[in-house]
Image 1 (cartoon, rainbow, N blue to C red):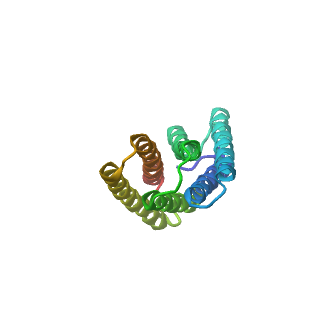
Image 2: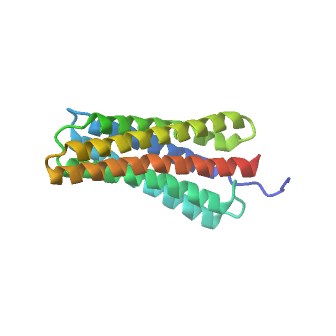
Image 3: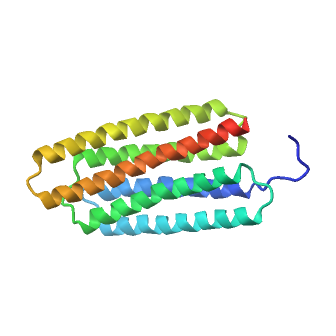
Length: 208
């Protein structure tokens, strides 16, 4: 329905910034867990991105309180930003554990998880700008959301295989507990990517 009151489009800039921070944090995590990198330096990068994303979320929620007409339902904006924040928080937590636990060498399973997470966040970063003009290319958004679902399933498979191997081959129970925690945090980050995709899907349905 046509409205004489324009919707505030500044939200889209905040969405885009959050999407860029999301993808950057996943890329930094992939570098962090790769063998032979400066882990403390990469951890500082991840930590900085987490703080940056927190600021974007606060700015968005504050803007919601001050804005009369929003581009989407207020609840959808809140859920979208919270979901974006959840992923970055999980990446931050996994990064801290990886460094604090002094993991000697990454397993190929964790490296695969990192790549799936990086890819999922990249697809989301590419999808979020479409929120500005959902009616122009909705099929592109749907294709991206399908890819997110496929990546989440791939992440599940990697996680379950990693856990089975961990329990089958672990000789140090303390190290096994550390690995399980890191695998779980990385898996949750991938799962949260699907949550973001679901929110975008809801917004798409409501606004076509």
